Length: 110
Image 1 (cartoon, rainbow, N blue to C red):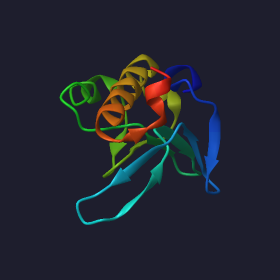
Image 2: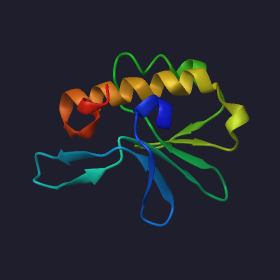
Image 3: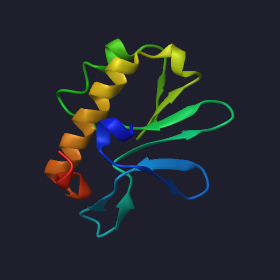
Image 4: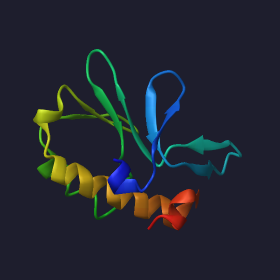
């Protein structure tokens, strides 16, 4: 993920490993900072924080492999269940989306 994002890993709380950061602000006024992409190696499954619902990324899910989709993340039991090349494409489309729609440190890295 360092190679895909151009950022070194950083801990976000006790369990999330993130790469880069961006600032979001919703119409409701809620705002904050999040990693551009990241993951959490939890006991039951990996949580991958890598997906933005774009026209480019939606069809990639069909090629990803065995996973469950949450509201904002992808859950996999083991990395061998998914296609890492497709995961890379999903991450890169997410980085592009975040770069276009949020205040993002990724502008300096792409």
